[in-house]
Length: 68
Image (cartoon, rainbow, N blue to C red; front, top):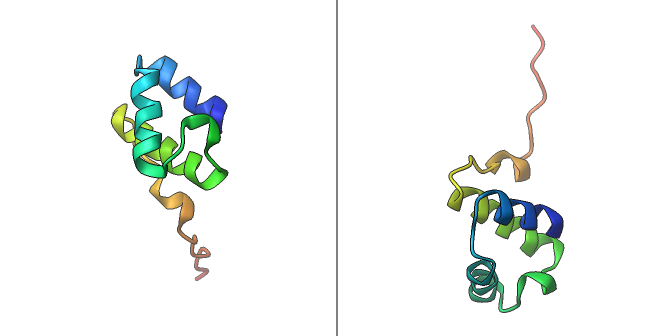
């Protein structure tokens, strides 16, 4: 996840210091100290910031396809 955060930052020319500040504001720790859930939330926020669609359905349970 931390590698993916780095990739989003690099590919979208985001400021690393700004992203670390964002992690501190949201979670009280820098990017390197994030746990998995915090890193996932930061990734979602970065994708929105970069103008990419967030994967909001990731945490929602998918309903099974209905059969006729």
